[in-house]
Image (cartoon, rainbow, N blue to C red; front, side):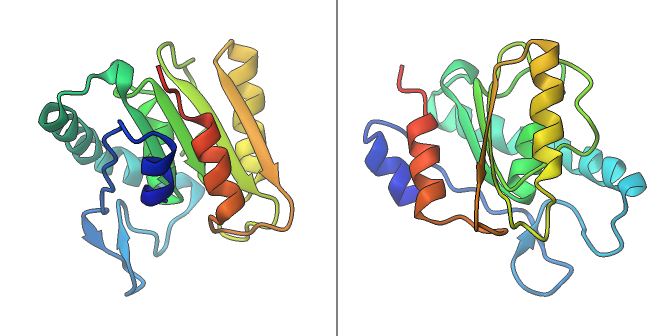
Amino acid sequence: MAEALAAANPAAWVVSVRSPDPSDFGIGWQWFPVRGITEENRIGRIAAAMPGFVQTVRQWQKASGVGVEATTLVGFSQGAIMALESTQLADAIAAQVISIAGRFAQPPKVRPLATVLHLIHGKEDAVVDPRHSIAAADRLSLMGAHVDLNLLPEVGHTFDESVADLVCAGLRKD
């Protein structure tokens, strides 16, 4: 994905941030624990991880000299969840969020004033139900947010070339 993003906009700084904690399933990394997660405890787990997420984004913004207005967060699964939830904070950390197979912890309560949202979700995703993206897009649209939704047939909880193409097409280049 990082290579596709860099090729789409060679002048861009592309940073791939690894989640800070080892996965509680033994493979990979995570922003928040998934084992035993429920709709009720998801909100608290994501809220507990958010300060570290925001700090990481702000550190990279400082290191690169790039401000909020030129920052796009592209996230897959938990990365998408964290990026989406960051739009519910009082202070925006990015001008654009591209969510791949993500969801909000709970239905969005505030309209992101300074952030454009692109939701990309496979219709066959068995990990994060695509209905979460559909509901979020509907709710955000009713709030007057800048949001679009791409549902991909025959795509599960993954990203492939078609997803990479959508991400690259959605990047702001101004």
